[in-house]
Length: 276
Length: 271
Image 1 (cartoon, one colour):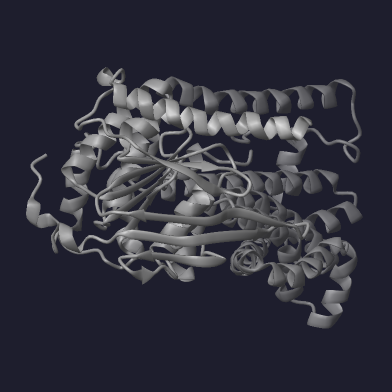
Image 2 (image 1 turned 180 degrees about the vertical axis):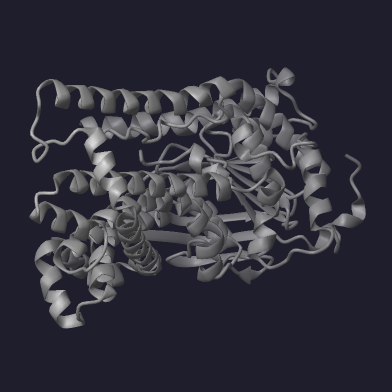
């Protein structure tokens, strides 16, 4: 798809940066205990940077994503987009979940248009924009199909279009390929990189897969659980465009090894502590 | 009464031959049942005040066609009024129940209480309070029919994937658009499975009400004809009632298929 540079008004310089400053989030569990999902997480993300969050279950990755989305508020600390504190969901973020969660009664096109409809922002050219997005993800001609007629990978592509339709500067993805089979998953990873290169955005991508995290990211934020903290931020210096063909690249290998060490090293340490 | 037309689990787009089978088989089974019934009655000379033969039921019922038609119309009116009022009451109730735990806590005991009262016992009291007219009959019908509709609608409204609610919040949509654009459409298959139960129960409710207080209606016809040992007429009324129940049920099924084709394919609750 020919990318029209004018589509993103305001230019790259105005794109917001995400800044988290000692963000802590505490949940009250049902039996009255307090669960610290995130503790003192500080993170700065530059415009159009691709960040992946990786870590074991329960390390607060999703909570972090929801705080940036404005769906959850920090208990203490400050989360801001472009210097403005996040107090509620903001129009410059788009979100993709693990499940496509498309509306079963609506066509593919209407599913993509759904956020605009909910925001009362449907305009005469909205349909063209949605169609262009569907073309971008290779789903031209599927506009009037029902989500039921699509495969899991195709449904997730529609969900990505849905997250992009209001032209957000920040794309938040919560294990978007977690429910897909391994082959589709690799395909979608490359697809996402292509979309990102055609429509640059700040991406915050949560995943369990170290390979996926390294393949996609400029920087991988490795998190440790209970309470969720940033263990380390690993730079991935591999050149772009990337593909699974050059997975043997030393920079990939180096980053992967470091992340493994951080995640599994901790696991061993904590299990040793538990057994002693 | 073996009117076996309850819908089989529907598959999308049947072949014409399959559709013919689906209609033909239950019809043949029904016919065969009547035939066997007739033969047994004649063969063993079953007294007609116990079980009348189908031919006798037919003759006696046809003989009073105008009465039967008038009674059918009366019952149908009560059923439909009760059904419509049930819908009007149930959907807002379901929305309120799912709106907040506090409202649910306040409403649930009341709802369960209305269900624990035996409707047959309540009917004569309602007649005294509301007078001998259509009103207590409709109230009884509603009391019998509305509860499953409330419960399945409420379940449907809560069945929305949490991600979609988050998406709606991320779009800063109002509670109203969330209800209108996400929750209600999601609840449609559940609402329809509630409607299917409700329409069947509405027929039951109407007949119960007619037993207690009516001067017309199929329930009234059964009560009066049995009082005079006109058992074939009572059986005739029973058959008309069950046909009415099946037809109304099928109308709900058809309405779902026509207006919400995406819903009937993936009905979450077995109907």
